[in-house]
Image (cartoon, rainbow, N blue to C red):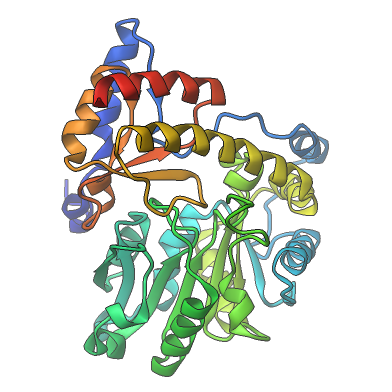
Length: 383
């Protein structure tokens, strides 16, 4: 059968091999503590599924691409509370079925494959930036991150800037947990505007951070974009903030012209969030207390794991925000194997692209008790 050649070129996610070995251990009756996938196990706050159940209609009908106005207004209210940013809910907010599909499909609305448009993103990073760009026919330019693991404008060559159509930044960053500061965000906004590119900011982890490190929380690109958010789009999600990974609920916010283009694309593909899911999202975005409670849980897990790695001489890099611990270990494949044989599943840094070699990513998804149990495994394997 003939298929799109990009499917074969990209291949399967490399982490699948680790998951297969972990499954074999479980089937053999071994205890497995899995830090490999960013899918937290804390229960979704009860008021959220309650809102969803109450909104399930007697007669099911198609949702609109634009989404419920109440949801768009609620997201605008959240942005005002969280970032002090005012956006127009009618022209600058677009609900999505989670953030992954929105990230993947965005290049389809903006890339001209006949013009050699370039999509820029950092590596190591979320594989969907590359995958969406490749399927849209863009030229991809990965920027290898190191040190602070932040994408700086100076790391992008002038020749690439001249052809750039989309530039992805992720803050807090997956997989490292680094945070892009306001000054760097402002530089990126200015540079993308100079060349007529769009700056796309993946901010799905913006409400997961250590309060001591970020008393007001990590910044949003919307804070430096100014009124109207010209040339900027921010991608938001309920997944980690509210424990709603299975609900698939997110939003894109920013430049009204770009939002209109995405709305037209999504109308063509029939991509829209069910209205009962939108009702749950309205409940989630309306409340900040549950997000603060979840933030404390993740911070406690991070502290437990950071300490054991520090004790055995493996430094944690960045990792003061987001859902992940990024640990420098030397041979990431060998350390992954040793931990896996002992029942602790982690992700080798190289699985997230160039620049990830020598690091491990641990997703803070097991329970706190499981994290504490993993400490003894890590200590026994790596000392």
